[in-house]
Image 1 (cartoon, rainbow, N blue to C red):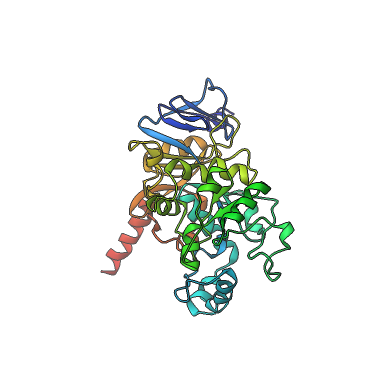
Image 2: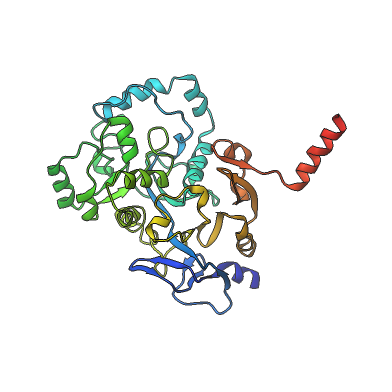
Length: 370
C-alpha cells in the first residue's frame, strides 16, 4: 500500500506551472492521477527548478490510422475538399500506399497515437469511427468519446448526416461564414498545414480565435504537419497568431470546444497530463517552436510515458517499466508497452536501444563467427 501511495502522490517542486490564470511558481501536487488541491504529506518530491510545466496538448483533429501512409505528391492545390477526396481514392491504389495500409489497423491506430504522444499531445479527437484498439488500457493517448463525425459536409458516402456530426475544418470561410459560426456558438477546428498543402490557402484565424471558437488539429501526416508542435511552429512563423493564442488553441480552448472539462489545464481536479520542458526564457517560447526531442517529459495521469533518462526515478516510483530509446538522435526512456518493435518501426526518428545483455549476446555471436 505504501508503494501504491508513493506511486500516486507526487509533488513537482520549483518549476513554473502554466495555470489557467497565468504562470505561477508553487509546488504542483499530483494525487491519484489528478492535479491536487493540496500537498500530500508523504508525496514523492521532484525538483524541477528551471523547468516549465504545461498541460498535455489536445489535438482536435487527427486520422490516427493513416499517419504512416505516404502523402499525395501531385494534383494540389485542389479547388475544394471534394476534389481532393477523389484524388486520394486513386492515391490509395499506389503500391507504397497499399503496403502502408496493409499494416493491421489496430497497429496503425497505436502508431498515430504514439506520434502524438511523442510531441506532447495527450488527448486526440480521432476523426473517424471508434476502433476497439482505443479501449486498451495502454493506448498511448486519451481520446474524445461520444461524438459524431463527417469527412465532407453533404457527401453521404463519408460519415453520418451533418446533424449528427461536428463541423469539419473549412479553408474557404468568408467573413459572413465566420459571423454565422460565432453567432451560432459553433466552432472550427483548424488544420492549417493540411489546408495549405491541399487547397493552397487557409482561413484567417484571428476573429475565431478571439471569440474562443477555434481549436487546432493536424489532420494526419497524409496531408498535414508532422505533429502539433510543427503545426504551431508554422503558424507562429507566419505571424498568424501569437504564442499565447496558440497555446490556448491546444489546451484550454480545445478543452472547452470539445467538452473535455478535465483536460487542457492544470487546475485542481484536472487530469495530470503534463508536458515538461526546460525554461529557455519566456513561458510561451519554451513550448512553441520546440522540437519534440527537447521535451523533457510527457506525463499522462501522473505517470511519465516518455522522458529524458534522468527521470528514471519517477518511472520507478510509479511502477512504469521504461526501456531506452533514441528519439531524433536523443536518448529517452519510454514506457515498455509502447516499445513493440512493429510499432516503433512505423515512426521515423524513433528506435529501440538494445539492452546490455542483448548487445553482449550479439557481440559474442560476432566473435564466434569471426
